[in-house]
Amino acid sequence: MWREIPGGVTAPQGYRAGAVRAGLKPSGALDLTLIYSEQPAVAAGALTTSQLRAACVTYCQQQLQTGQPVHAIVCNAGQANAATGHQGWQDACTTATAFAEALGIAPNQVLVASTGVIGRLIPMDKLVGAIPDLLAVTTREGGDLAAQGILTTDLVTKTIALESTDLQPPIRVGGIAKGSGMIHPNMATLLAFVTCDAPVEAGLWRKLLQEAVAVSFNQITVDGDTSTNDMLLALANGAAGGTVIRADDPRVPTLRAMVTEACIQLAKKVARDGEGATCLIEVQVRGTDTDQAARTLARTISGSLLVKSAVFGRDPNWGRIAAAAGRAGVPFNPDDLAIDLGPIPLMRAGQPLPFDREAGKNYLHSDPVVIQVQVGDGPGVGYAWGCDLSYDYVRINAEYTT
Image (cartoon, rainbow, N blue to C red; front, side):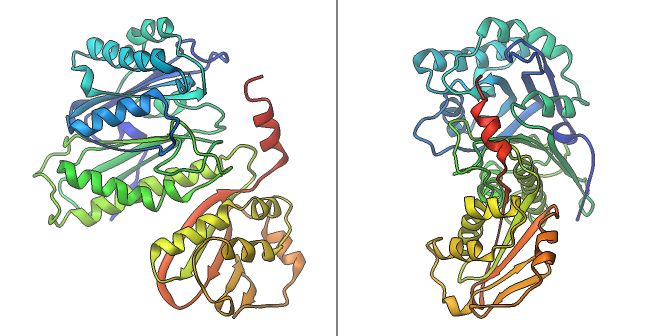
């Protein structure tokens, strides 16, 4: 149905991207990023549910509600521009206006994102002053550069690109993400930007994105903290050609699968790069009445600090898995509970099984660590991803602003 290709957000046709060092980060690393669609794109988004929203989140929400086409996404790294009052709002608007003037488009065709320390204003003179240099490096080969420019405490870039193999003309979906700490989403999470060159009807594009978010970004957790800046923005510009894809189009299943797969891959990369993490944890739950119930169980288990600590300590203490399942708020019969740690069965029909503890310890050196839970014979299936909780998580966050 599709194949993975290089390029990230610039793999789809009609997109350019780039990043520069504007001096927003004390480290001097890349900190200002532009993703640009050469033709107007249908836009969709998923935004944080936090009551303390960064100015960029409110700004993007207002723009997305208009349904107007979008040309550009701008992201600064170093300052979250959250809890910054009226000045923060003005800075978000100024960012959109300044880039619009430089690109020759309207301000409402620019979406803005920020990441960094909460309570810090953006040095606007540096941001605006760097726009000419940024435009000069914004190219059709700039996807990897953009992936670097949005990072903060991340150790690695997170990028994906897919191309359909069963459609003519073929369509492509690309994406980049950042996130390492403060990951426990209630929308999407972190920052993620997805591009697509299919000609998609606006309502369908929004629906496909929300469906993808439910099984990807909303199913990861690192530390239980939801950010003020969580944002997923997705553009579809139609540059691949062909007729507009509507709800009853035979191309919808392929497009849906590609958008979902891109989001899942990015979400898993974020979870694996959790601050101080040594491995990815994947929780698979089956047997509930609904998929949503299974996803709730899986997310509760993957987010358990005790489960995460046990994985880091290579301690096959399956009781922590069972306890997390029990507090998830999803009804099930304890006599139906079954738990496996990778290939090792630990519980069946609510009863513990004898197992080789050393084999369990050895398995916990795997990456990913897969935990399988069955709670009945219902049709529901759900997945969630997290990471282990190491000593370094405390160190990284204890030293975050110092």
